[in-house]
Image (tube, rainbow, N blue to C red; front, side):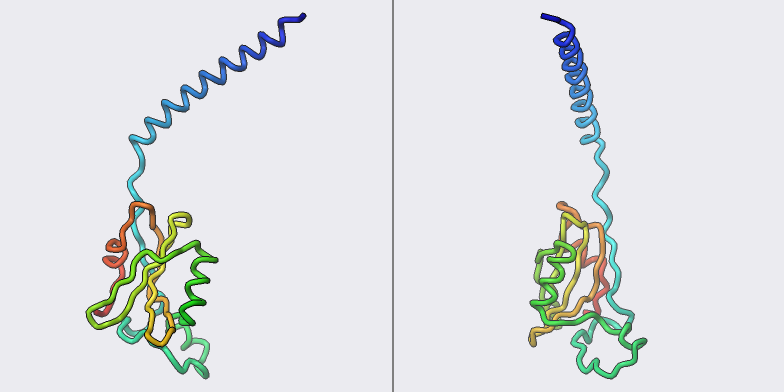
Length: 151
């Protein structure tokens, strides 16, 4: 029986073991030097006047340029399904502001995105703001601190 194939296999296995040991050492070093959590960034959903009037109705008949000054609004169930499908975002927090506005924060650890939605009593939801930087260590307070709400 020819021993060369067994010797070659032994050399490959020892090289593999040395490489894995080196990777384990690198992994423990990189875990110790892990980058800090990404900073939360926020982008307003529209350029209109403040967020104090989020219930946008009667948009039929608006000129195309006027429509960009309005937030994106649709049925709450449709909004939630879209955030889940398009961005893998799910509900993280519901907060009722001092003036009674109900805000819902949707976020995705997978995509690193978040969306702040105003949920109206009439079943209509409007995007208030969205952004990036969401991680497993992010908190809703970090997002609310970045978003400039009128109330």
